[in-house]
Length: 260
Image 1 (cartoon, rainbow, N blue to C red):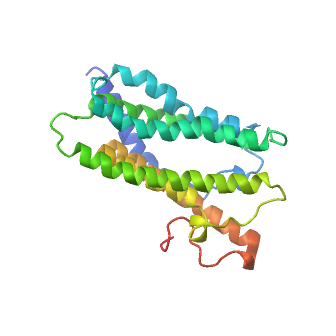
Image 2: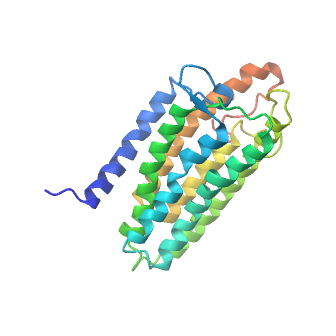
Image 3: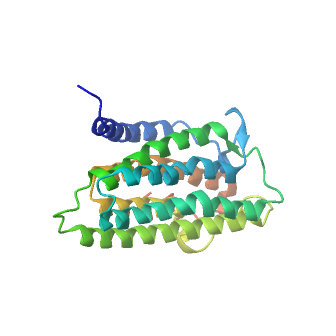
């Protein structure tokens, strides 16, 4: 049987579902070595702004390459649906690294982000960008979908709420780092509830995307996001407790308010 795009698409989707439990399990034994967990032994490193730009960039250029090739390219619903996804990744690929660079340009480190981790993230984003963009542009069935605009509107509210949490929390963390003097306890907003509201916001975002898309592809991305970010939030929470001891608020959860 000839290999087809549909075969590639289905294999890629199955791979994403398989990667989720594997990622969750591996994160129980291994903490991603960047940021506050940076350590030697992971090969050469690059500056964090460059790392973020490079590893997130496939979600933009691959989407723009794939999207015009799909049968839904001329359907306005496809363009409405992919827009929030692209907006998130424009922020993550361009605006967030630029903010990092502008805040730390006088003392930015060229050894802060392992290139090996950036390459792993680059590979994941290649896979995920292909799945999300190919599904919206080609495999999604918009005609006769009477629930599309209801699902899109409800999911968009969830998505925008999550992105607002994510961006605001990142700005708080960048602000604390720009002050110098080492790590400080984040305060205000959702930081009063959880140690990693930036992760919580991203989880909420992709829950909104899964609702908007109404697809296995969107749901697979949401599941992977949880499998990746929830354990990392636990690592960050334990780091804060060990770093600040009795000064750290004991009633804060790691990532999901009142739950974990």
